[in-house]
Length: 125
Image (cartoon, rainbow, N blue to C red):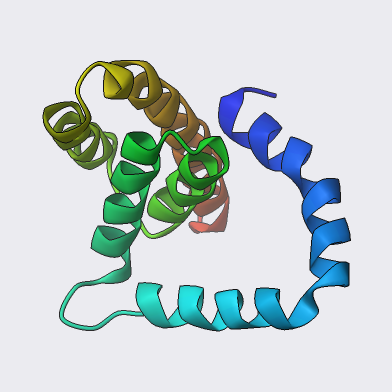
């Protein structure tokens, strides 16, 4: 397992425990999460790339992993992810040069996973 999947795996049990202790807080966050990432004037892919970039600037490993997966699932390309991460270097400076590569590694891991899944769904000629 690499950065993205490992980060999400490491957070799974502690998050489940906290979620069971404060379910109303998590229900509210889940509602906000769905509302914020739903397509509107911006599509979900763009919103996931924004969230990925914010995760880099905030240096949030869980956010990076989650939104790298979300951006890949929403169909973002590696170049789109790289350019979003590039903006984080502008806005976040040196720390973004550390978390940016982590974000790209996570994105590529999920991008490959979703590309493989899509290839398996395609009918063979």
